[in-house]
Image (cartoon, rainbow, N blue to C red; front, side, top):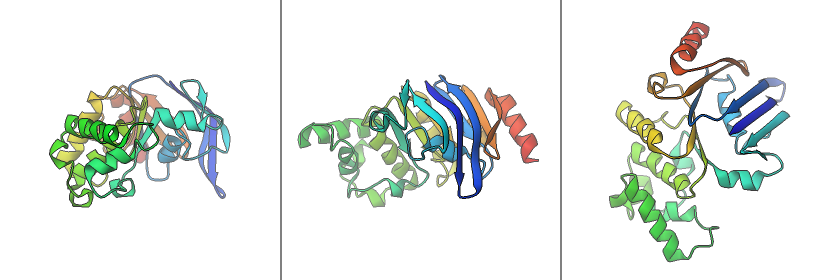
Length: 224
């Protein structure tokens, strides 16, 4: 359960979130809206990447501001550009690096990384230079680096932005197979048919909150 209570935020004089109240128990949730609508800022409050100026955010009862360390163990975050997350030379090393504070031995970390990569189609690329992977493979690697930590919630902030249509569909199809609760920020509206809930933001406020079809219909009306 993700909860927003009266969440507001601003960058300087610009208000980017105002009075957001939501309870999110569903497994597949999408945030949509125009650039500057506040959707990415809202998503980043879920694991404390952004501290709201007003209100509270809770994940499974944990206050994100007070219990930041515990929350970050429960919430994984995938960014639009995987190069911003890939930090090690090879795919296997990169995923294993996520486990550096796990208490596992180096061998155990490598084994766990290999398991996760293999289960998501990158098993043959464990020793492959990470920077030579394709765009789709890089985004998958960034996802694996979060999944190896077994988070309860996975927040994906426009992860399909740099992907072609085929890889966009593959990535979202993969999200549907995960056990984690998924919060997806996206402009790719045609990928949201299988989601449980779509939340539309405009000017920092929630203007629609419904199943995909009616929520996206409202979004298109607002977008003109």
